[in-house]
Image 1: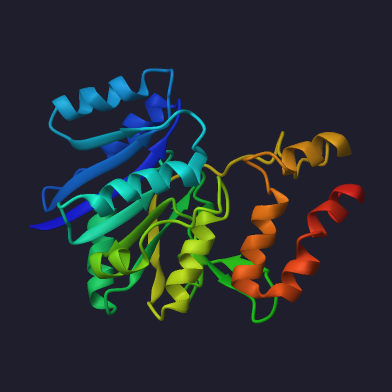
Image 2 (image 1 turned 135 degrees about the vertical axis):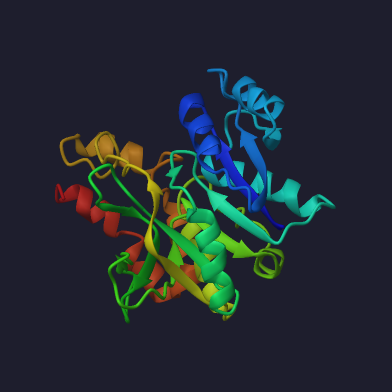
Length: 273
């Protein structure tokens, strides 16, 4: 039986977390969950324990509430890497996805057919519109397009980590997420690292689950907010902090791009864009 370890982090959305875990059930797979609960106060940890009592194979590690997405993922991945228990595949996931029946098994079949590729699950909203998945950068610069299920070419340069399947050999080779990132950019950086290593990345041909897109309202990209508030939100852990953004650009696109593009968000805010 094919074994899979699903890795994710969660914080204070116990109903979504439980719905995500329950949505992935397949008798053809031996599924293990390793999750970081980053100090939730809404009963998420207790909910995970109840799922474990009902037969779900769940290991929970705990954070202090300050890990954010990348920190939580690093803690869970670190636990997996240190564990003697190995599986055939590993999945990076977000707990706001409700996974469709058979989707994970189909991703494994796709990976095996295509040279043990990393397979990126493409998600949609309740209206059937693309939300998250693989990305493909333009030939020059840092602009990119989302790879949709209707695209002829499913090759990706990187991905959103809403549901990403990695064969064990690639997971073990790539290791953990870069410690420079607090919340955002860690998934894009991880995908680009896989691409540079010469490992194939491709998107799924059908949507694998429901995941609503995060709204721009009350983020640094919200043009209805004051410039002062947008600057504050941009530099917050969940925004686009300058040091992390510069590091991401320098690492993946070179110093010239980092020098120019690291200031672009400030220009957009000043122009009210």
